[in-house]
Length: 410
Ligand SMILES: NC(=O)c1ccc[n+]([C@@H]2O[C@H](COP(=O)([O-])OP(=O)(O)OC[C@H]3O[C@@H](n4cnc5c(N)ncnc54)[C@H](OP(=O)(O)O)[C@@H]3O)[C@@H](O)[C@H]2O)c1
Image: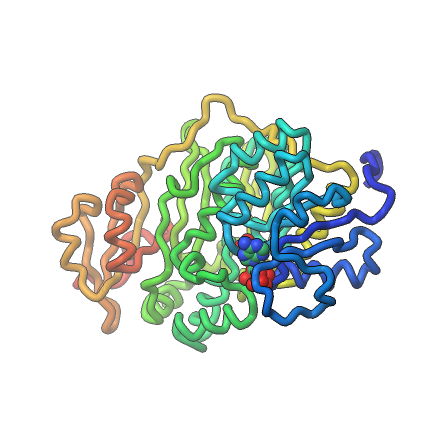
């Protein structure tokens, strides 16, 4: 890039942790470039007995073998164990070694600590691949918007649940069959409940909100509703109303607070997210005061798409790139909003609604043979019953324009 310092005038020497879906994708992309940008000098993995696609000489099984190798320029962390990743990444940063990671759980849960370690040790931590696979959203937030106000950032960030919902939408499969296919294609997390319950979206929202608003929110503090209890009836109900259900993460500035939520949403046909299909991810950045909406979409997971974001980070690092995180809205902090949302609730039984203090003034509705409830709820009140709702029912947010004329009162 013109004007940017060229820090290395030779291929970078990488110490790579993990050689699974993303690690192997990285190897293939670097090989196609004849290893001009970077070479893989060593790989640390876990299972000694596993067959590998490249010579066994390059593999080690002890993290220290790579962490102590002073000839390495960068540690690339691509493992599926966030605790082990924490040990690897913090050790590398403390030694002043630049780190590239794809691990959203690690980054989201330890955001401030990892940034501090990188700063204190005068080194760099990059993690574009952690959030929405191939979509360059962190770099975009860092480089395009650092001084532009952002009112909200939202979108579909989890490829696996996107894929599942698309399959169900097309009438092709149940949630279980679609999940098995997502796993076969390498979109799903090693623990797929993280995809469908919303945790994966929540980690990514936490990272995006930190870069968009300069406010760090622990993922566990973000209210989360998942798609684990969705049925084909809910998909049909959405279709009848010209909507598609998507698992959405949204961070929004409301009266100088940031309100973040992860929940299934009935997306109307004229919404910018409606046509995002399959394993596609999309991020919508909105600033009413400057540019309106920007939509960035692309492949959110999979071997090569995710590895392409790692390659982009390697390139960025080779040019001396780092994140500045200079977005800070003064006086802003996180709070679950006291805002009203119109919600759809369906479950085997809705009798519990009568006892619920979180959901008042609900209406039981009937459409063909489907019974469900709708209610205007206060989001912060709703969150008090979050665990109960997630284990007993399917809840989704309805678009405001659907209003109350929806299904017949039962
Ligand atoms: N798959 C995607 O589409 C995608 C998209 C975005 C982000 N990510 C993130 O990228 C990371 C890697 O995902 P993946 O899908 O490539 O996982 P994966 O296919 O399950 O591979 C995991 C790799 O990590 C290695 N590993 C696990 N624990 C280790 C340890 N303690 N020390 C050294 N190596 C260890 C495994 O070793 P063995 O080979 O010996 O078992 C394996 O090679 C995760 O953080 C994931 O969330 C993945």
